[in-house]
Length: 377
Ligand SMILES: [Mn+2]
Image 1 (cartoon, rainbow, N blue to C red):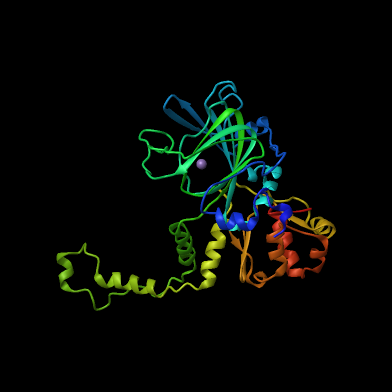
Image 2 (cartoon, rainbow, N blue to C red):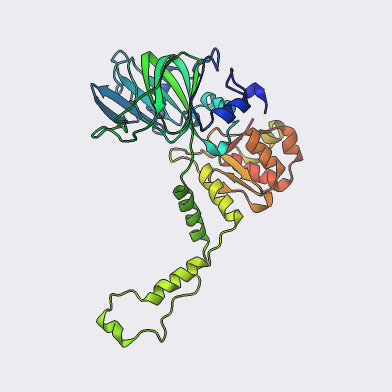
């Protein structure tokens, strides 16, 4: 691993992954010394007003919490001086190249686990209350200070009648205040409550672990799509006179017919890999790629001159003999192409890579550029 991109000053990659990842929280003081948010508060608020932003406004009024969903126009947000409100914008890595660039630091965890970067801005005393997530998260303090209280969750019951999922009994065993540049890692299942000490901004780099049911749904959809219609059910010679007394009853042999057809389904490793890769690279609902209007010959010359880079919104993963990008599997003949794996790992290719690529692969890359999935560098 190249340590130049290792983001966590104060602990080695090995020690972090062995002792903390998916195990216990870790506070790293000044893990990102001199870190300052690439996005200003005004820019974040502007993003929250865009149609493609996933924004929420959380307000606290005594013991009660309310949530509103964006987009939020300039006048829809409370005054900055009003305490106890928080604006949360999900998927900012999809909206801003500088924020997406931060993800390069976190690629010591497989891309397959990455969810997004959420940014929250809170007025004094703002927060979302004591809660627990299914995510691994790195909380980067970007501006101002935030107090975090954390602890293991012994009682998972939630408060009734609240717009947010709030722990009914939260017993923190740790109480810390983060300054800009501090990073707090939290594994899933740890109770936490972050409260702004004065106005502050926090980045949450989140990693998801999809539940089996979600993966299976995707696999079954794919298998269903690939099924030939097969033999048609027949009841020749099997409809008896007794049917007339109970015509509404489903014939048992019709159930057998379906069950037998289903038991012939034997997905191989390839089907599992493609289903997983397509699900994990599926663009989020708010992502729209704009096709590149540059004439193909001109686009080709630009690629030959400078290589290409993936769009910040493109998700690309590979497995033993398959490459998946933005919910699609690349044609099988490119499944083992070293160049595509390189593109997935580096998220860019240089002019020499382009020069070395066989024509069929260049045509594929050109097509991706035309769809807006990649761009000349
Ligand atoms: Mn949380």
